[in-house]
Length: 374
Image (cartoon, rainbow, N blue to C red; front, side, top):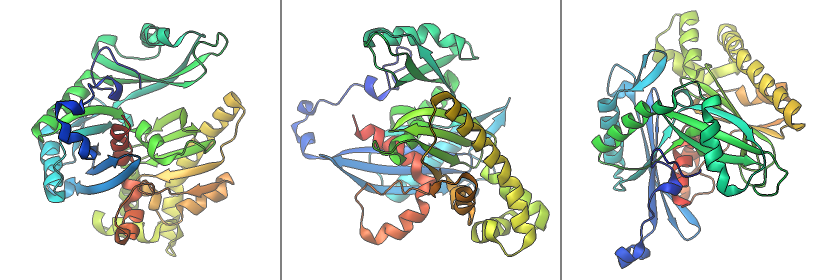
């Protein structure tokens, strides 16, 4: 991402550690903690890098239900605000339980706390792009420029060639959100290395550079994002209010069961349940998601003249039995649930466990990797 003149939260704009300040530091791997604060849980991943190799040092998750009766985020005026004290305690609990000592941390910013858009600039040299982005941003962001922090990334075009329009991915984060994360980091005893929109973390960890058009669908507890990535460049990102939690609540109402029992049934039987009331209810709830994905793919094809090659499902709900197969049938594309840990070093004995939990840790892993790339 580009340097940000408003806030020093971009990785490129953080002062790099000079190893000559302490010669011993060059003999130790660089470490980074990625933290994903969701509505119902906090996920933490600690990674290290030595040369080109990256290692999964540790990970942990804590659910809000195991600590408090309330979720980690509360709804106020249509937005999801952090409960700073409770979140900081939860983060600290995960760090202590996993024995994570690394202080440098990158927090992901969820799609419902970030306004993201794409727009084009006329051909121009690279050194003029930043000024042009900030000059034009107010046309695309429905918030006062004084109340937000902007960040951007060039995702299309070639600066300086005199003929290529430049496609910009723009993210706007309310300053109040940034202040909340600052407080959480401070209260948890961490050093805030950067903040990053979660879609960029997902793109980094799930889509390889050689992979052509991929649709990455992240189904979260509170919302869902549909992202199209072409050779690791984010081309389109769309967020809407399809929530994994809806499936459980609706199913609980139909079955007359408690939340925990319903959640277990949903995760075990899913769309392929032999019980008609379960499978029928889930299909009715999933079909609106299918329609939204179709709209995004059609719009992308009309704009770019390309079709996607495959679909990646991530987020906790992606493991719903039968969902991957249903998507493959509907979209006539290969559908995968990628493993965010696949390129990392870790003890082989953890392989099966990590594969199952990978969809829930994609965002935390992705933002942590961003810290290791600088």
